[in-house]
Image 1 (cartoon, one colour):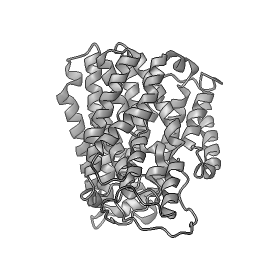
Image 2 (cartoon, rainbow, N blue to C red):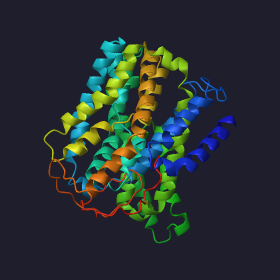
Image 3 (cartoon, rainbow, N blue to C red):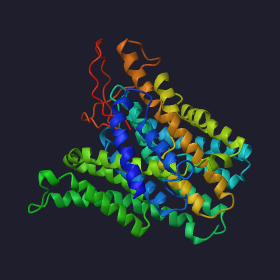
Image 4 (tube, one colour):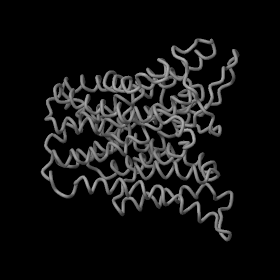
Length: 436
């Protein structure tokens, strides 16, 4: 019950400060992370949670599923058909470069063997827009930039998972067994994708049966029921729940836009609650002992991962595209490590592989530093776009042609491609939702 009281208190404080957070570098995500660290064993000792506890894995798993499900609903297939090249470059070129770069600095600065170093690189390769919500959720930020970051972060979780599992198998005593064979991992990924596509389609067909149909006040619960069934089915069948969540959200929004519109407020709130709970639990693991266990070379690796590896890899992947310099730099900076890295880091810790604890320590500290760095810089950078547009500063390169796709106004993770329209000189009243 202590944990529930702490969560309720932190939630109240976050809501009361959310207005200030939307206008400053203050981040509600950071508040929950610091709140967890404060009440954990490292400071007050009110909550006793260790990394092997089931509550840690469960909250991170649920949060990642909920965030990917709601993020998937913001994907517009019509706009992706005209603007798929930049996300594909980020995933096909930028992500492997970041993965390899992190492995190299981990090996030489931390001293881990190559297999474990590549495992650390795979765990930290996925990105998460939750901790840069002012970038992917504010309308003054160019739509193609929001789409690039949101599609990249939604897909790279599923792409990193098979690599993580294979490297755990290669590094541990079960290397070469069928438990983590490539065929088994491929089957899990295909199963997750199939469930994520079939279940929403089946639900959409049921709604169209003449004798069936949701009452308006209960319509928001239809996607929720779909998500609950999908989550449980994935875990029962060992299908990949994260790929299933993202694909299910995208399919549901495509085949049933009325369900998406009805569910959106509830879905955003549920995703925020699960995210805050996971941040509180993860923060309680950030004890002084954890930070003391990381050598100096590990801290250098963490800083390089945030300020060099991610930015350089994405800038290289976007070379030669029509994205202007300002948007490239913004996309390069916002590669926050989030819930996927937390979940995969716990898999490393619980696998029992040699050097697993050292790898987890590096991963956990990198995630903590990333949350602090990215969640406290998204609002100032988002405002930079608004101010520069208002004063008429031109882009360094002419923007690529963009397509309006339905005017989706999702408060977080909006990905439809919209036409850039010059803003009036007078600043209008902001109507952005409070940022996370």
